Length: 459
Ligand SMILES: [Zn+2]
Ligand SMILES: [Zn+2]
Image (cartoon, rainbow, N blue to C red; front, side):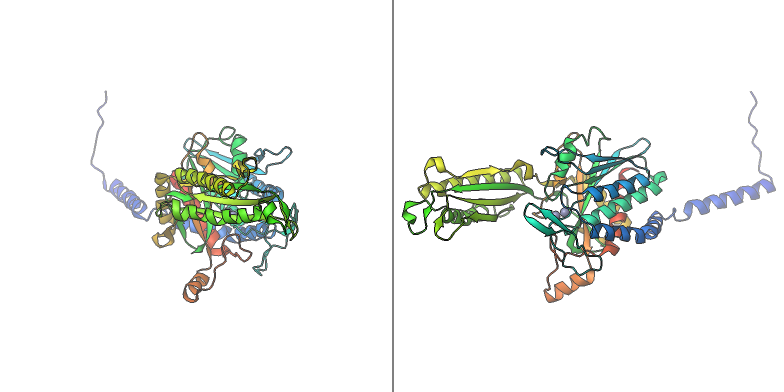
């Protein structure tokens, strides 16, 4: 066997070696290609086109379950970026109803699967922002003709998702695994997530190891994001109460059991559940949003109907509030002398109810660190939970029960928020006809935050 000869370097070799060594030192010590700057530059290049997409979506809102054109636009853009796209994913219970759910899949080698969700539906609100790109869309509903507006900012969510898809399609050398991007219909009616999960979102498509989403937040300045771990959005239950009395002549109340008086007592008594029965350090809401009764001033009607929304963070609190509602309503009717066969009917509408959104602590902290790296610590805030609710919660309940995280995206012009703090001026919130996110820097920030989060999970 020939012994490997070593010999000292001659001068020529030495100078070549020194040059090579110098080159290596320069390469290794030069700030590693500034990934954040690169991301900034890439987003900057796409920004005009993303803002145009946002304005187009904003001007063409569609109500829950009617997201036909919106979902087609989302599908088309994901397809253009190279994702395998499936449309009309989802199954509603009502026969013949079409779900406009979109699923896009981008496979990029072995690794975990991250699912990013946007919602797509708008609200029956007539826009009063006065913006040049304000919606003028009107739609016919069972309740008559209504204005339609992206008053919850789902147009912003879609734009951020499409921007993130552009970034991740361009940066495929920086990640490994599978990206699933979904456009979910009917969030405002909490039907879309259930419809998509029930149609095999986790079985027909890659099973997610992590599920991410964001929601815009009017009280956080555009340019910043915020996060909260654990319960972040409340559970929501839709409760319908039919108060059954005994009708009759308005001039002969003694011959009746007046359901309007009985239901009025119920409205007030229901307010004692949160104030007297729930631990003051826990949180719950009971709101009576609908009270319908009567047809004519001198007729005592047979029935009155109440529609409630109930919010809580803990499942046990939720159960306790629902049980208290039943007990109070039954008790008041009995005290008024309503015969047992006319006792009130209390129904929890399961299809309109959702559990609390619980951000997985480990995933949420990891996302927060990634966002801090991308946006700077000053732009990533400790957020607060809210009593609003989301069917995003349901993505954590379907097998394999992946960890989920929804973070807040600042939406309002920082100058407007400053002014509001100083003068007490009102800041239009979600579902307001005057809700007007500041597209730039909200879109830039959202794309950067979501891209950084996905890159970290798929590194
Ligand atoms: Zn909403
Ligand atoms: Zn929303």
